[in-house]
Length: 268
Image (cartoon, rainbow, N blue to C red; front, side):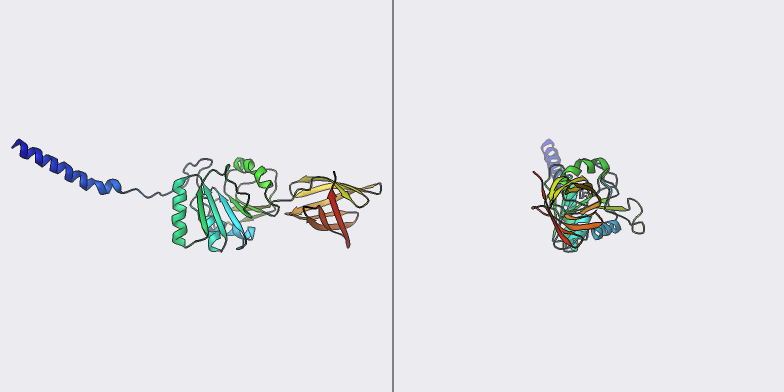
């Protein structure tokens, strides 16, 4: 009787273990929740209407390479990819990365890619468009790196600014979302701060992001430079009743002052 009972209990234990195995093998599918903590910020999804507005502001085309820092569930990257744009999401949470890849596959967004990584360590310098939904202090930490990106790179942020670097354009999407409905666009400006050699004299420029002021000393006469503006590497300013319009190149400044050609080179 003891042997029979022992055999019965063993068989029952094996049966119970086998019946429990499928349940142990099953994993609960990750579902993000609004407000969940991340490495640097909590997760709040960008409303789809604002995603569309941000991409419109950046004027993305299939020639662009978009990187979304802190890509969450992947919706910005996926939306860009469905517009024919090569797009990459950088996300610290591996569960979010897996979810984004699943969402991209479901949406047929073949140009969408996601990597697990730290936005402060990842090299995003090759992006032509950078999208953000981060806190102001995070944007400020990223700002020096962003300002060293190629002139003309477009930066679009959901709701949060870049400190004293004023946005080139701001738009609201109140009809498409209920919270965090402001999009801001910055265009990385070329660097023109400093001294320049110009025909007959020198030019001194002071740069505050995309805004430029200064003076030009030609043939012993100093004249102020007003309303200087950089849009990427395109540069305009007013001098002596004329307007300069041209480009910042590796060789210097090339353009026209009024109707006349005007070139400048960095002074040694």
